[in-house]
Amino acid sequence: MLCALPGIGLRAQQTVRKSTAAKSLAQLQQEFVDLRFGMFIHYNIPTYADQDWADPDASPALFNPSRLNCDSWAKAARAANMTYGCLTTKHHSGFAIWNTKTTPYNVMNSPLKRDVVKEYADAFRANGLKVMLYYSILDTHHKLRPGHITRAHIDMVKAQLTELLTNYGDITALIIDGWDAPWSRISYDDIPFEEIYTLIKTLQPNCLVMDLNAAKYPAEALYYTDIKSYEQGAGQHISKEANKLPALSCLPLQASWFWKSGFPTEAIKDVNVLVKDNLVPFNQAHCNFILNVAPNRDGLIDDNALAGLKEIGKLWKHEGPLSPLPASDAPIISPNIAKGQPANASWSNDMWIMDFANDDDFSTGWTSNSTVKAPWYEVALDKDRSFNMVVIAEHQPNIRQYKLEYELNGVWKTIFAGENANKIKIHRFDRVWGGKVRILVERFSSAPVIMEFGVYDERK
Image (cartoon, rainbow, N blue to C red):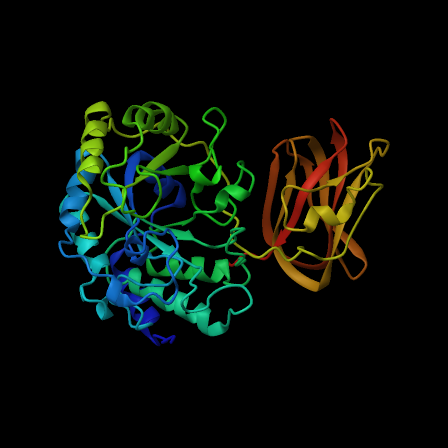
């Protein structure tokens, strides 16, 4: 059952506009990395199933903690010198642990009948900690999964996020999972990223939007996220030497994200390794470290985890702001209107023909034949379209000088002509209309390899 919330968005927007002064994204990103270290809290119906992914039809009756105490979570975070928490408001099986009006599949219909998100937010603020929230786009209970997504699902996501960003005070960041991931297969078009991003920023201008799956994109640009995230358990590792973007790396203290029956007697991760090989070097690389601590079925943190957090607090102290972030381009948040459109190019190398450069796959690309002295690449849009951004993602920084042009009514017009040595070449400009877009490469060090050629019409 999906229940819409007509009107709540407008009321919330009016409240935010009156009470919140918007900061620049660069300032928010700096403040985020300056937080340095926080607590991820995976606590939801999987806690009661000994699984990380719960049965989508699991009964709310399972969610029955006898001693839930969010204040104890906050004090455990403080003991480790953490500065914030992030709670799983809804995981992949769709159970909401707040008082939502969008679905009966929520904590108020469990034996607990208490709003866990509210108790968490109140407790962490009372202990001087920032509040962040985790939200899963994938929702198997409500059939928000590939092949089943409808406008009602999009409306549910917007209504749920409106509740979370309206009823629980200032939210420093919203970590969104299950979007554009290989295991969820829900694209940024299925649940429209730009539409959701704009809603979040309207409700809370100072709330960072973080896609937990952002590491699939090149490390040199922010695609569909305000903060580049790296989930170590999924094989995503930040470059401690080369990273220049605001980043987040996450890891569980225990063996998995949600509590398991063996956790009270099993060893937690080595706290010395967590500090010396993760927290300290990550901070030096503009990266915030979030360590997951899984509450048990009573709603408390196990004694061995509490002891580990205290040891971390002895080993590491928060020493204030980090070095300033290098300047970076604003995130790319719009649909790529060049994706899958007919492409043409000068002679390609072997099998790496032009279609590989607009297939939405950054592991493949168009490669120019080494004998071509003036390579070019072109995408024909499905019709004359408006757009205001073009992004060329290279395999390695190689193309040095080039022209970007668009065609309207048979006439080619210049967008950019000059030098740009970046691996990800982001061009934003006043909106134009055209049916084709191309790059004419004039100077390069080796045969150009374009992994993705993107054309976008950003909301402004």
